[in-house]
Length: 64
Image (cartoon, rainbow, N blue to C red; front, side, top):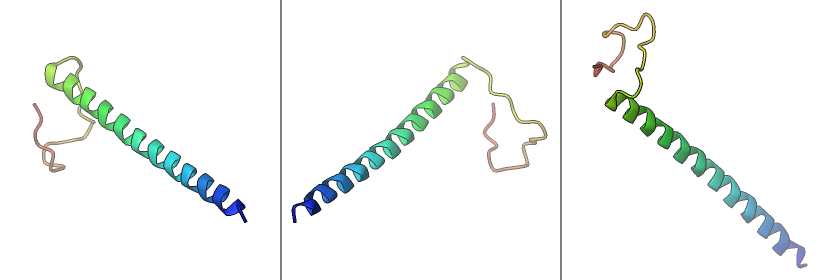
């Protein structure tokens, strides 16, 4: 009855691998968002406003 230890170890390993992949994607998305925000703040690139997007359309009115 030692097979349960192997199954438990594989299950825990898969769970940890999935958790690390999920956390890694979240960190990568956050880092990319910070780079885009820095680029927009310091003028490294220009972010275009989508067509038909008037200042009254949504709550995001902090445009410069």
